[in-house]
Image 1 (tube, rainbow, N blue to C red):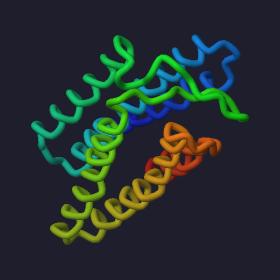
Image 2 (image 1 turned 180 degrees about the vertical axis):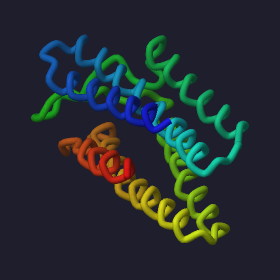
Image 3 (image 1 turned 90 degrees about the horizontal axis):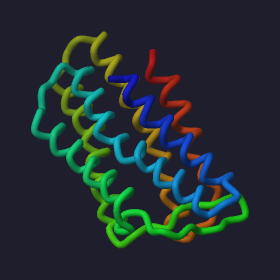
Image 4 (image 1 turned 90 degrees about the vertical axis):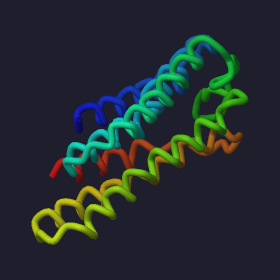
Length: 178
């Protein structure tokens, strides 16, 4: 499950990098949509990781999370409701313009993302083993660091800052693998 989390981050960063550097708008739009294939799956694969890490079931939450992701993946490649058919041109590269449902995506992303530290915190409170508590602290710290990657949503709102979300991801992946 850690592999799936890493894979979604790789898809996101690879697609975003290729979108930024594309010299054709159609190619930038394709890679921008491709990057959201990874972004859409980050929160549910992270919760899957937490579920396995803590040995908890929560099947309904997993199903809802992945269903939400697949809905946005489907509409990103079939309509302009999630990702528009146009791009922003920033000095550092191209970025896909959001569609009318993008804000709902961000709200869902934040909701599903916040389930991770909340679940870790609740498990931490109910665990008395020093070893297990330490493991939970390490993973919780990793999630706190990677939460800074939400910064990458800002260019979608016409804030032309360079998306540096890959940096917290690198720290998270190297820190959490311990």
